[in-house]
Length: 464
Image (cartoon, rainbow, N blue to C red; front, side, top):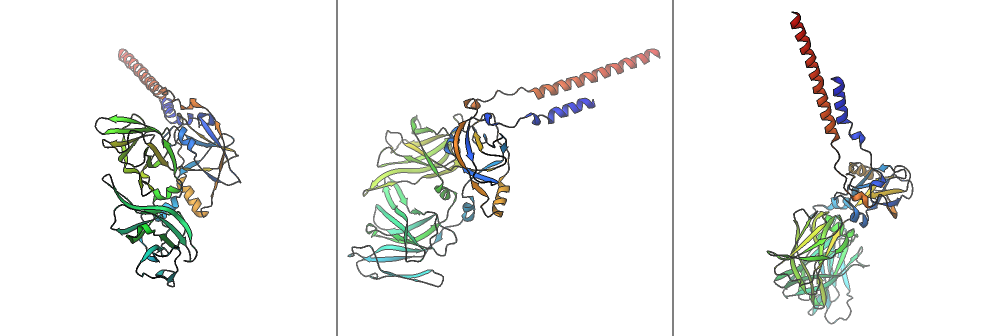
């Protein structure tokens, strides 16, 4: 009986040892990765092609191999994570602003101004050479951002406007000393419009990720009837920070008739992009539609709603007005659907879906000799459990953020090929069979022992 117990335990515990580690030929494709220098950790941005040929939605069928064909630890992470954590949850901050006047008779936009600051460099007064005499108009606003602790991702501008159909293009300049100015943003549109029963408003100016103590907002002549009433600094969240790394892919779709909701449009991205923003390229000018955005991982799954937004492409006073991208909860869904409704303002043509997605950074340990191979695309390989995130974060903090060096992709190769996408047949339940065989054998042994005991007892009874 003891031998049978040992056999059962060996069957149950020893099965994991029989699973061989993956090899490069278990994956369809690969990228040859060079690692300049002799550092311990390297990173690379995962290319678009990987997302198009990966098998698993969690990107689990991906491994990094060294020149000996051995897997090395790796992890996937987001860029700019430290920037997100520093400003996450920071509320908008009101900024002091000062009008700069220019007489209506001046031909030049240059204006002589005097700016007074206190000992901390905070602007306390701005005076134009022409003052605010009758006929003067506001040509610009100087915005004091010197007291901000974090760099803003944008400015929210509020204004008083009595005129309908307000649309202006403004520029934003930056300065460190109020003397030398350089351009940050050109031709950013501010607007408040009523169109087709919809109220369209754009009050946010996106800013590049730069340091700026002072900002200057141009205020063109066509904005004469509007005066700025407040300026707020908007701090970066994950969506705004990812704007710098976001890539865009356009997808052609098809119209689908829905008896209850009207026309829908369906799209197949044929990829596992980690989408966090969508937009529509409308087929005709002066189109506007209020739509729901839905997606699903595969064709058998139910559609889930990701966002709701207004998409438009309008001409107003010679200026093309288009909506900003619509944020969606980040996810790797492949199939997308746009519900346009019974009263669609798109027309008969199918709009082009634009998916904004954020590539991952792949960080790996450069153990062994290079070159390394990033292998991907496999229906037989599962997700690797390599909890490196916390360890790498501690190491990077200790090294001042300079621990991870940049690797580069030099060549794309075919490894196991398309056969790696064929799902394997379900394995035979040999462990179950062996266990049952052991149990049956044990029952047989017990039966034999009982039979022998019965014979012995019967023999003793006859002798008595």
